Every structure is written in C-alpha cells, then in structure tokens.
Image: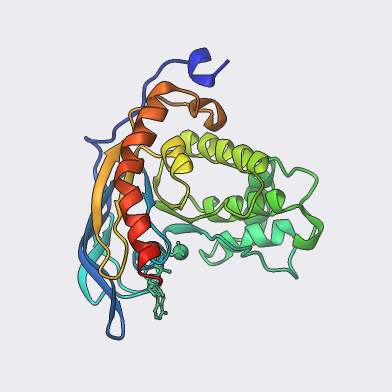
Length: 276
Ligand SMILES: Nc1ncnc2c1ncn2[C@@H]1O[C@H](COP(=O)(O)OP(=O)(O)OP(=O)(O)O)[C@@H](O)[C@H]1O
Ligand SMILES: [Mg+2]
C-alpha cells in the first residue's frame, strides 16, 4: 500500500504563495570564453523543492555553485532571502555527490563541523550532533570513522552535517547517484521525511528524471550546453508525503514522466551529438 493511500491529507503541493527564497535573475556563467549558461532565470520559494535536470555538462553544478557563492556570475544576480550573494554563503547546506566527510574525523566530529563554523559552543554542539545522528538512524555509530561506515551511512552523516544548522537553502548535487537502487530509495525517503519536518527551500540537481519527479515540487529542464538556459519548468502535483518507490507506480507519475521526458530527450540527444 502506498504512503499516499495511508495518509492522503494534507495535500501539500505548490508553493505559489510562499515568499521567494532563492532568486536567479538573468545569470550568465562563463569559464574564459566558454559560456556555460546564459540568461538563466529561476526562483525557488521558501519551502519549495526544485529539481533541476539536464544533459551532462550543461551547467547544473555551475548554477548550484553560483547559488552557493562558490562561483561568480559573469552577469546577472543571485539573491538568497532578498540578499545578493557575494562570496561563500553561510546559511546554505550543501550535499555533494562525492563523499565529503573528513576521513580523520568520526561521524559525530564531522557533524559537529556544521555547527563549529557558526560559533556554537562545544557542549551544545555535541548534544545537537548526537540528536541529529539519531535522527538519521545512526545512533551507536557516533564514534566510527568514515571508512568504518557503508556508503549509505556516510550519506546519512553528510545529510546530518548539511541540515544541522537549519540552513535557509539546501543545495544537493546528485547526492545519491553513487548508491545502489535500494539504498537510494531509502535515502530519498529519509530526505523527504526530514524535509517535511521543517521545510526549507531545496535545489536538487540530478540526471535521474524519476528522482526529480519523485522528490520535487517542480522540475526545471536545462538545455544542452553551451549557453544552456532553462527551457521549461513542470509543476509536480503529486501529494505528500510520498514514498519514492510507490509513487513511480502512480499513473500520474507516469504521465508526468512522459511529458517531461518529451522535453528533456531532445536536449540529451543534442548533447550526445555535440560530443562527436
Ligand atoms: N572550472 C571550469 N573551467 C572550465 N570549464 C568548466 C569549469 N567548470 C565547468 N566547466 C564547463 O562548464 C560546463 C558545465 O559544467 P557543469 O559541471 O556545470 O556541468 P553539469 O551539468 O553539472 O554536468 P554533469 O551532469 O556531468 O555533472 C561543462 O562544459 C564544463 O566542462
Ligand atoms: Mg555536475
């Protein structure tokens, strides 16, 4: 039985009335003479989960790094909560594709880093980190080093690290792509559960259209590069809470998949052609 069937209410789709948390206005990103993305406009409402999909090399990570303040746009502006992004942002949580834990620190020490940079005292840091590790299902694993954890467990530590400080915006760059399908489903459900508790603006990048639809409130499609731009944006009007494995069997999911793939497919094909 699907989660949606057990708990059909409340329907929590669409964030049309919420204030804008991330705003990307006419952003162009270049590397030397190579224009990766051009004139990109995107907004993410507070509490909205935006998924971005697009062919490899089209500029997805570049856009995410512009939001994080790690890369500076050649033109245009990025604002977070009405403040222009200038330099590395403090109030975002960034979940990377690769393992980003410090190998010489234990789980709890890695999670504490998320608070240390914000000046939280040692006792409070330890208490909050213990409780976050329990929240992501790692009670008893606090003193293990990353190499003593499975890939999924390491991802859980990273999730706690990214979320512990209660960031205004959560950025995710293909965070689950290295995991096997079952662990990926578990982690996606875990992420949705945590996000439902305290909704933040999320920008998730993925090359997996199923993941984008299963998790997102909206799916934005980027064109093949160079000079990539947003070609279309699709609202995902599937109720929450969602179970990512179950929702893929919903006929509305399949309809959405067909529609969005019709738009994405051409871009993926273009990107393959340009490689020759
Ligand atoms: N530091 C850099 N210097 C030069 N070119 C870069 C740099 N970073 C990215 N690029 C180029 O910009 C384009 C966009 O890169 P980006 O990493 O954003 O793509 P992506 O959509 O995240 O791809 P993938 O799905 O493979 O992760 C690519 O053509 C890439 O080669
Ligand atoms: Mg990338």
